[in-house]
Length: 446
Image (cartoon, rainbow, N blue to C red):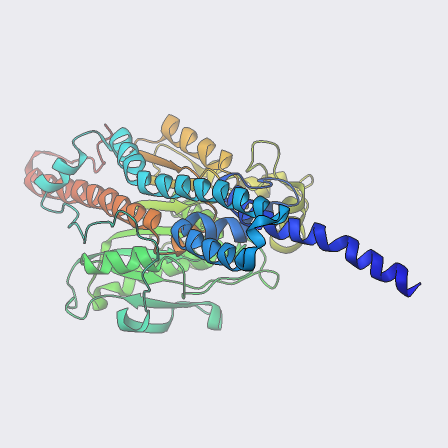
């Protein structure tokens, strides 16, 4: 028996070496095309795909170092050594393609802006005097993301905006030089985390960091989380935070009349739901009269139809999770309530200007739902809709201050500058036209 065990272990060694030889290619292949985008393996495809697709050059450097170590001592002459060389060469080609796609995201985002706002959208913003101030140039390579700290950007932290204790707290990001009543535009950031996690920390740092440098005030918020919370608790908290911002942000230098909202994943769901369902009393118990409208929404990789977010009726395992943990009621028996929890159900002509951003390789929230949301908005809304679909981008891509994220942040800043310019222009027109009847406040769609 001991001899049989030894032979069994020895027989596994070649297969183990072969497996290790193929690992670089496996990681890169999953980043190029996830092993699953809607099935049970989709959650496993996300973590490695996320890191590799946002850090292709850093990944290549690590892989080459690992390959050099594996092949030392003449092992490159063996069968497994040759296999490792071939796999590494193929992986390197894939990583170069991922880098090329990240660099090309700037062009894709600019095309989306022109398609949604018009070819002259930047000139219109400049004419109104609020064109996006361009930050430092986006580097061509950007192999390693920059590190962004939180503490130096805080104006205030842990501010209570509602009765739910630690889950109703928010922070304020702003430059020290922004004076009280400075009328700076305001961005509310809603964190993601599958409705069961999410804090004011770690998410959307690259976007908020850039916006406060451009003179914005940013407000990341917390909200009640499942399984303790049951929908609509989450959206009620987001609405309550909007109401608090409008009532109090002036003392931090923000403009209560110009508030926009963003968020990723579950935060993309909640931010878009808040934008589409402005002032809906069912989501504002006890503060029904508060104004919870926003000037624009920028959801990232959000869920827009809880019952069907992949074009196939929804991933079965995710539907079960929402039934059990978030909604706590079955989809089949309570479909109307699931529809009310879905942003796409609230789309109307009054929807605010919206920029939807999603990655084609998202294996947690498939891109098909974002396509359908953007198409529905364009068919109904009186306001501009920008839809940017980024090749090879995974879920949560913009948490990294990566090359793709830097291009994305610049595009979002330009979109918001356009919306701000349209608001300023319409406000000025309203003042000039006081004696000539009312002016309709609307961002002109191109």
